[in-house]
Amino acid sequence: MIKVEGLAKAYHVAKRSSGVKEAMKALFKREYKVVEALKDISFTIEPGEIVGYIGPNGAGKSTTIKVMSGILVPDSGSCTVMGYTPWEDRVNYVKHIGVVFGQRSQLWWDVPVIDSFDLLRDIYKVPEQEYQSTLALLTETLELQEIIQMPVRQLSLGQRMRCEIAASLLHSPSVLFLDEPTIGLDAVSKIAVRRFIRTINEQKRVTVILTTHDMNDIEALANRIILIGKGKLLYDGSLSAIRDQFGTKKTMTVVYSHHANPFQVEGVHIESWSPERAVLSVDTSEVVISDVLIRLSQQVELLDVAIETLPIEDMIVQLYKEHQL
Image 1: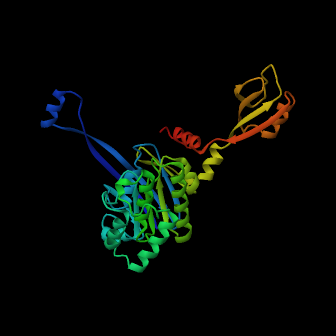
Image 2: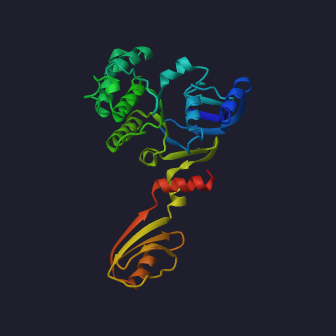
Image 3: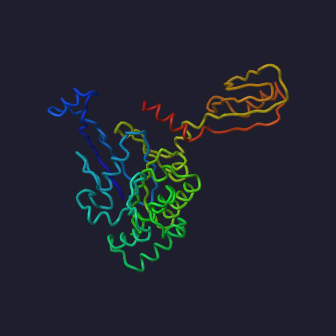
């Protein structure tokens, strides 16, 4: 479906110090620095996959999406999607993809949403019957009934993003590129968008490439993660492998009858302590939870125990630290 090999892209960025003197100097002689956005990126994505493409700001995520969608031409390397080279076969290629950039709109600002949809139907030459069927499905699934007749400028951010996703799917693409699709959305809108992405993936086998800083999006949708940092591919694997690597650390909250003195348990770090409650950090690769409970019960009368795994956000932070991002 998608094959990227040795992709590289660099930008020449003008640099100038502050001050009037430096500004005048830059008018006659401008200095540039080279920023390597992508350095030898290679990966393959199979049909029907949902892949989380993650990394810190400036890592090269959006540049990769723009290359794969045909907006940018790389300096070197190759990229084929469904047999097309995106920047060479763009007219035919774009019929098969949908693209959503969270901070850019493809809807016309002053006209009702449905007018933008109708125009996109004409641009993509979607047959009327197919268009009406797809529109009905998108309207119901993304809950657009009450907003589809409203001008885009009157919509909230969450409403507009739902319409943006619908617009990108009107021509029934096989590949969907989502760049920060839930940015700025409230909890209800995020859940609706996630549910819809999962639905079209399961029912229509749409391949989804998702870039986001919201790790809850990744956890809810993606089984595979590609991590990029400083333009380099650093990790390509499953989310479960990350949990296996970083999920051994547990947070244990214990409530007990009044105990005047702090207790000590081998292999356990006490994060906080009070006479009735303590928060403990436990690494299950070094000590077994049941052994910790036995040792605790020998020192205090346990009333309640809660065990939590490290949140996915913290695991990804640990992965960033491992690669010095």
